Length: 545
Image 1 (cartoon, rainbow, N blue to C red):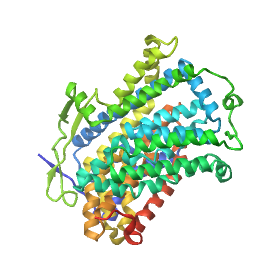
Image 2 (spheres, one colour):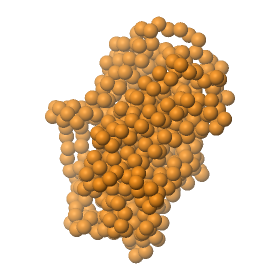
Image 3 (cartoon, helix red, strand yellow):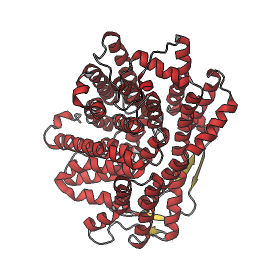
Image 4 (tube, rainbow, N blue to C red):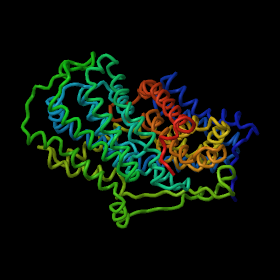
């Protein structure tokens, strides 16, 4: 027997939305005010959501438990699988001593923390986001920055800020492709619309990130590098989004940015090298010299990683690997047991719940293979030590794993109960102001699910329908859902957990959340204003149709 979702249990959408916000408010309160550990905050939020879904939205308790377990499974795979293998690869480079050579080589290129952040957090992180996504860039780059001498909170926070620029085109464009599928809009045209929003935002991310690190005065000392990074990245992102589609904007933008910065540093250096005031003296030194062969060997694991995640992201490779092994099944007791109703769908329809276990084609498996192939490259580091390192990494990540699975459980519980749709419907009642609120829906969706792809799947169709009803270009608001979602990524509890896990600061999720929250809100408002201007003041920015 189908259980039918209810979206307005109080017959007052404003009041219903306020109650639907309670689980999120609990998360905010526990992380930002009580400074609770991530798994404690997630447990409280999940408990609040469970109580609301059963007592207010009328969801049967058995279905609520099942929806939560479905989210837990999605947290374990593929999210935890990516985080576990990414941190394991980093830990091996540290244990083998190769990361000391990486630090030394970066110091020879530039010992300036601002430039290191541009290279690693912004450019290399964008490459990882463009190829793999789903937590990979933050897990890898935050660990690398901490290893270089960044404080753990800054290492995680800087990477979360930098990761906003590529998210909408991450994982070879999957978020935009999914938004196109659920909304019924043309993929290339939607990519062009996102390409009129995200590159504008990407222009300011390197500047924003650097100001957060060192203040405006010290930022001006590296403006040539910031300008090169901004122009190379946003310009390339725009060109490929406009002419090619959603698959390559991030990958190509990251490559062009890295090359541009390398060329710049051959002719220019900052007048003053900058480090954090509280750095230990030994963290700021880079005098050790290593041969070219040693440097190449030390960087080999990350080069191998880049190759694997790139090819694993290609559709043809995914298809080939899935032909070897893939297991997909309808989640027992949940698939088609719940009915969506208007205005979420035009006619009542069962809510699907399918779980896919694509072990070989998963991004985490690409990282695993990269790690296994890297072991022989590390001198004196055999597979015995590598598997021992994997066991230690599992223990290290025990609390982040708990946090992530509960957050995904919370997200799916809110989705299947209809609470997420209640929040979305509330935004649709803003009328002519809807273009301003469209990015906030994307922001909220990513905060809820930790994924721009999931946010677009959740709200893409609603963005289309609402825009058409209020007389706004639906391509604009669907694109805004993807663009607005990039700023929700930095405060998603899932992302926070990944960052604390990779910087060995488990238990300090609240500190990192408070660090990122103000930037997330400010960046979201920037996108809201941009989308509103594109709707009513500067529509010439949008593609001609």
